[in-house]
Image (cartoon, rainbow, N blue to C red; front, side):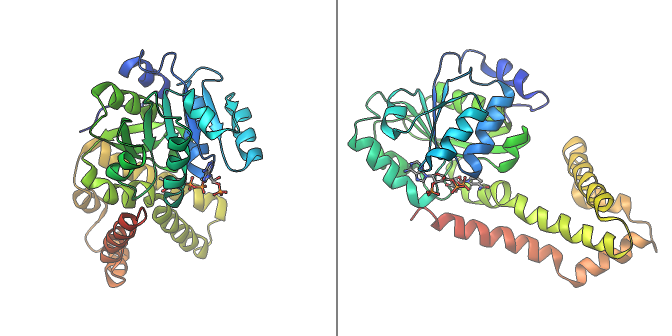
Amino acid sequence: MLHTSNSSAAAAVAQLDGASLAGRRLALIGAGTMGRAIAGGLQRAGAFPDAAIAVVDHHDSTARALASEIAGAHVDDLAGACRDADVVLLCVKPKDVAGVLATLRGADALAHAPLLISIAAGVSIATLEAGTGGRVPVIRAMPNTASQIGRGCTVVSRGALATDEHLAIAETIFTSVGRCLALDERHLDAVTAVSASGPAFIYVVLEALTDGAVSCGLPRDAAMELVARMTQGAAEMVLATGRHPAALKDDVTTPGGCTIAGLMVLEDGRARSVLARTIETTARVAAGLGR
Ligand SMILES: NC(=O)c1ccc[n+]([C@@H]2O[C@H](COP(=O)([O-])OP(=O)(O)OC[C@H]3O[C@@H](n4cnc5c(N)ncnc54)[C@H](OP(=O)(O)O)[C@@H]3O)[C@@H](O)[C@H]2O)c1
């Protein structure tokens, strides 16, 4: 189920539910790769007004730097930041989730039942609900690093205590940094493999295609731009036309031509099964990360 469009991230925020983020405060826990990507995207989209995002991280200088970049507030007290927040966005590694939740519970920082959104791979809604004492609405989300440029793709799943309004808040947050879909939690490990890890796989493909072009004599910067734009165009053709990739591939493949010759090389290298198994293995490992 597709809920939103990313044609204009800021407009989408206003359009989806202009009131849902108004006056709300966000505590962002973990200013690493994803915390920075999401915070940067939220700031670009103007999703939260200045200083409505509090940033907390183990590394004080990291939190300080991010807070200054996004005109947010830097808070060095994890419990204090959450006590003041309507939404707590947990962006720490899966292994650190239990510790953060134990600290928050110990400090009674979740008594006001803020919406807890966790992006930790493999950490189930049941684990998050148990870690918060079962009295906090929980949404599990799986975004990706392209959130930083407003081209992210996030899937959200809600827990038992999360209402339609909580889901709308999460969707508004992630729509402001790209696209957002709501799916059942059972799909989230596959989503992690495709949406969250997927960019790494595509970067390897981009690098390899670029190397091939360089080997044919193309300057590296031109090769890289052509490969990236070609990939973007091909992906947008799939989305815009809704046609099966195999049919789009056939359009490019003249009988006896150069494309079919290249495709034969891909088939010899079992590229299809290698890529499919890459997703399968990644999803399996993702499922175990929260245990
Ligand atoms: N990277 C991706 O592409 C991606 C995509 C989708 C989802 N995710 C999920 O996003 C989460 C974050 O990943 P990441 O790559 O952004 O990790 P990261 O770069 O390691 O960032 C996590 C940050 O949180 C800090 N932290 C840990 N425990 C803390 C605590 N108790 N209080 C305050 N700060 C704390 C870490 O500090 P230390 O370094 O000192 O531990 C680190 O600075 C993970 O759960 C991952 O599964 C990642």
